[in-house]
Image (tube, rainbow, N blue to C red; front, side, top):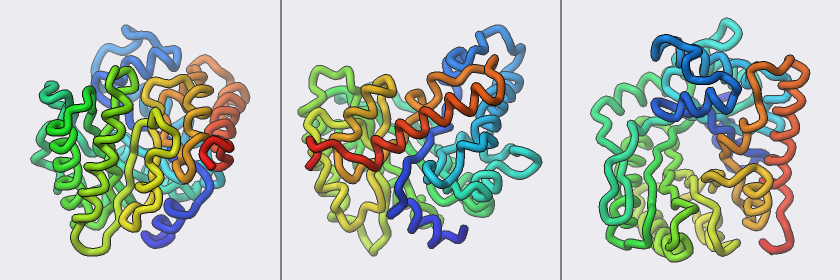
Length: 301
């Protein structure tokens, strides 16, 4: 797929984006969920080898295709690795799945009710390498804990500043200011975030488009103005800690928003499964998330 083909697929395709980008401290948790307990590896390299094997199994599965999975977000090591003897990026493209790369280096300590992204001085080098491999876009995550306008404005400002750096490198950024779904101020934070995102989108120079990855809002349909904004290629939702059934119910209430789930996609997969069991479990999750992304409930009408 050429860049324009990937852009059209992401903007217009019926499906969702798989988040396969667990990294660092989240890797042991992801492996435990897969049935590989801590202690099964003796080095960080071995740990990342195991998580790469899991991702390779997913990408190689006959049910993981561009028919329902529009894109996949990769961890840097996964992008640099191979699946079935070819680069991971090529393996995805061969299946009709658009590749993205996680580019943030983790979170700063909380201040003003939010966690900004840590500095990433080597970002330009990563973007250049990703573009050369055929990656379409990136993903960068911040977290909002409280309905603090100053903090939320700082998150959005940082996200769009980094987003401009990504656009300049010829890639499409997925801007992810996650609202903590356990926050007592979640509904108010959703509203402030909407207002700050609209201001930032309206102020964007040129005619490039960005993507948004957001927590599912308390009020269904709240993010409709973002779905409809001319500078937004697509709005995707993270599961944010919801189990898959609940995440899919909430997602189906929001028109125009598709899933970009991680745990909610992978939760039922186990290392010990036979290939038939693994493919059946993954296929069932894909079908459920695809349905919530494409068949919306009357609540969203």
